[in-house]
Amino acid sequence: MGKIISFLAGIFGYLLKYIYGLTNNYGLAIILFTIAVQVIILPFTIRQQKTLIKSNRVQAKVKELQEKYKDDKVRLGQETMDLYKREKMSPCSGCLGSIMQIILFVSIFYLVRQPLTYMQNMDAKQINEYIEKYHISSNSNYKEIDIIREAKKNNDSSIYINMKFLGIDLSNIPSRNWGDFTVYIIPGLYVISSIITMKITTSMNKKKLTKEEKEEEERKKRELKALIKAGEKEEDDIDTMEEMSKQMTIMMPIMAVSVAVIAPLGLALYWLVNNVISTAERVIINKFMKINKEEE
Figure 1: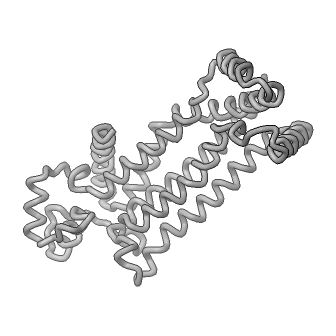
Figure 2 (figure 1 turned 90 degrees about the horizontal axis):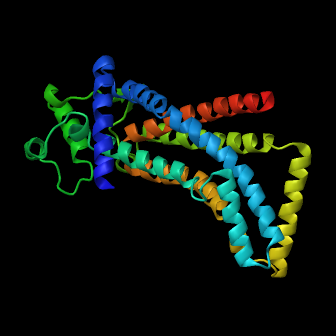
Figure 3 (figure 1 turned 180 degrees about the vertical axis):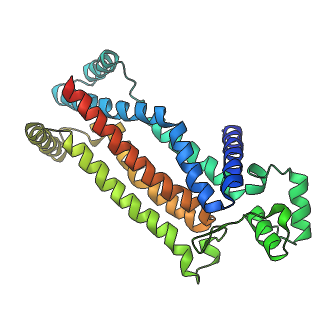
């Protein structure tokens, strides 16, 4: 997995370096880089959205089977597998999107954490020479960021990267600069965008159901809760994949903010822009799919 992430970070590094060469501004380059990445993975995003919609429909049928065969675990398992075969779906199909998010998450972290390695294509020997030249602490988790900051102080243009963006230094690390109010701006905007995203996603899912379907869904939920409370049904019978999806929706922003506090602000900027673009894409894709479904 480490080699895959390093490989992706290297490819992303070439792209970011090219865009930076056009803009000469790290912040603007990250914004354009984020847009470019989203365009590249757009076919996958569309496919993932289709899978999600289909998965929601299949999970509704799975719940019906759970109710129907609650006393026959063997029959329930067989009927569930038959359902997935008929729908040409895998029970784990919803995991692919989450796995891809995590890989992108870590790859971009590598890129922003080590811009000299992945963006400037420096080898370990060159980097170690700069570490000795600028007396970078061996305990630093962001040696390459520290090299860039020291190079700026010493007017060393050979490795200079313009990380100033709208008055914010994207090389700053919040955990090292609590007294600088600017380090809170981008992570704060990311939190706000994540809350808005969750509300939009929830709203979109609710709109997919008619009034009668919503009432039926609520009825089934009440029955399921009653069965659990009465001890007639175990909680682990509740759809595992749906619960995982909900947890990922909540945990990804929390994990991102936690890392953003100890990572350079360039990473938080990427996540902020990525979140805004991804949400807009989901809304647009969902709208087109809804229109196509009505036409059919």
